[in-house]
Length: 306
Image (cartoon, rainbow, N blue to C red):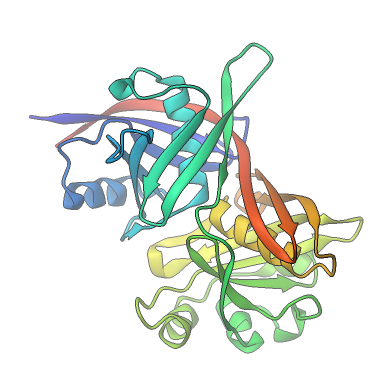
């Protein structure tokens, strides 16, 4: 019976059993797409990554990302965690050279830079979003409220209306009034299905990222993300959505040039606190750089029987 090795890490945390879980298959050669999907469904983490040799030898690896139900073009915590794993296993395929990694993905090239502690040990990574901010349709507040089981009046529209935003993977993004409202949110799957048919009819997928800004520091956010249509009732850390929010808020600043550092806490209500660092750079009125960074903790290793 054949087997394939795996490792798991907790991402956007320095502590085990916090942050967002990720399984990484460091050498996925020989696996079919169907096998990858089955493995992702078995783990039931929000994502699992499969590392393959790069198509272009100038890149580090070709990385495929699967949720429990589908392959996706890009995600934040899988890239941060995969970079951390490869940084700690530099001999895989003999392809790691230096602290900057380049991953080939469906959304484009994702560049990751390893972070190290004072002793030189790899403790995390920062990635750059593969695409600039793109905005889809605005989403009416009533739809957001039904999806999250909160009052429409608790949704803030002063800074921006709820909107579909993406830096590689789309999310409905909405600001809520306060942490208490955020804590009350609970996904309504039927409302998500209706929203998916209305706002993303090509695949009926609809993921919602709710956030609130802390009054004492508007660049410190608390957030929650729900994607029940993808069998992810709640995600403890969503780097791709955090990057989209950071890019959106930076784009709305009146200044044509700005460098913004944002801290996003997520997963608190799940007992898996995550800390995501987003840096957005704006020049001549355009956000041109979105970096998503955090630490990781190794958790498990083993093999999967095929």
